[in-house]
Length: 246
Length: 215
Image 1 (cartoon, rainbow over the protein chains, first blue to last red):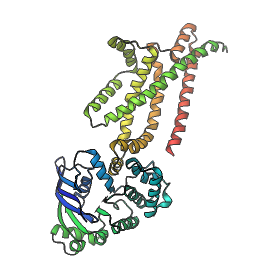
Image 2 (cartoon, rainbow over the protein chains, first blue to last red):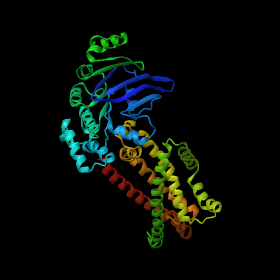
Image 3 (cartoon, each protein chain N blue to C red):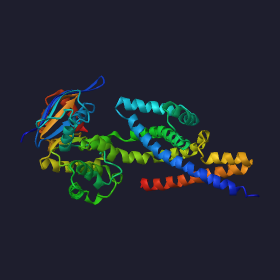
Image 4 (cartoon, chains in turn blue, red):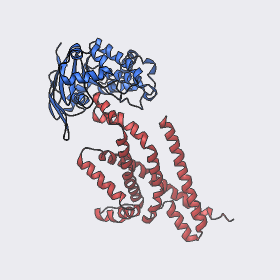
């Protein structure tokens, strides 16, 4: 088990607004990290800085021994193939079928032949419980089904790690469980995951480490039982008392 | 009613119709190409491309089509010492003119695509070009279809103005016949019917294409 990601002193400004002030974490292979915190604390921005959907204002990100912030575009694409992302609003491709959504990137990037890519895509759709929806258009699926397709799409690249940006926040409450179950399975299989979420139950049950962010800083981090039962920082206590009450 | 004039008028109009269709179709296809390039240039991060596209659109939208036609036919050959036939000038005018309006249509469509689509493509390791072609272009193309056909219809009718640079399109032919025969009422009525039929065919094609793509 080695260190997969070394993230050092990430800052991100949008104009005058400092969204991330100084974020550093290490991510171990197979680790599940859950980032919690109030909205506007910079959680999603931090996640998007990792795969360079946002360019950090300063700081360093190392993946294994490769510099992710190197301007070399080929290297960045290789990194993105290995570290996938699942979005809050799914971002499925609306004109393509579910199967085409999942197959597209492997065929385009890995030059995987279509037959192999199709077989792999079907296997992943079965895994997320949507084998029967292969030929449907995304708009005909429920939010929870769409998010499971998005997870299958990310998995089709056979990633080393996955970033989840509030994957259940846009879902009706009764659809959240199916998506979380797929994520739990992935965690159990040893996938490295960084998850931004408001699902405290998931954080408690699945996380190896919980990070609490507020105002662009990491305020507190630790094992879930430490954070949830003995939070040290007042800011963490206030936040947890508010969300756990609800 | 004496319909014998049709024996002379119709062959002239059909000759003109061939020119109208040639200039409209070639002009619109080139205009689509120019407009797509200019539309992407408008959305480009490269300032030079953006600037060039903006100047082009400003000039075309800011001058009447007739002035553009006169300029291309009379001024450009003098400036560059080249020979431009009136048909070639007509094609150039229609493509440059429609291109500017199509550029704005394309820009609007690209703007209308959820940024999350591009992010999804990039996060899967696709190149920016692959993301554009496989993910952005299909829904953008679908959304511009109605506006594109509208521009096609406008361009077909705009070819009538090319009579000022002696393009022998259908309106010019009708004017020739009317001035020789003094039969203005039947001539221009027949001319209007020709345009109506031509545009109706285009509208039917539009409905067919949209039905196929919208599924």
